[in-house]
Image (cartoon, rainbow, N blue to C red; front, side):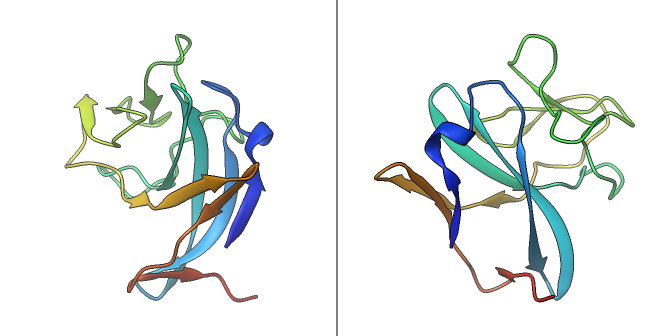
Length: 117
């Protein structure tokens, strides 16, 4: 599914939010760019199922090196989603992306589908 133009994701910058259906429930997800690569995750902290961003689209810490949960301070590696510190249980749920011809696309999976409105 087409998500955005490649230029819409800037290294360490604002994330692009989108909705998905994960395990039968509509959830927010986000896409970022980190070290030149596009990545996407469910917007759900593994400590408590709350959205991570402290303002819309703001997930990175001030250095652009970590994704932070604004509520609990858990830190996640932007390229893998793995917990790097703070209160978290495992890593963020990654959403497969591909990038080609200036477009970023996200890919469905068994438990991950487009949100229906």
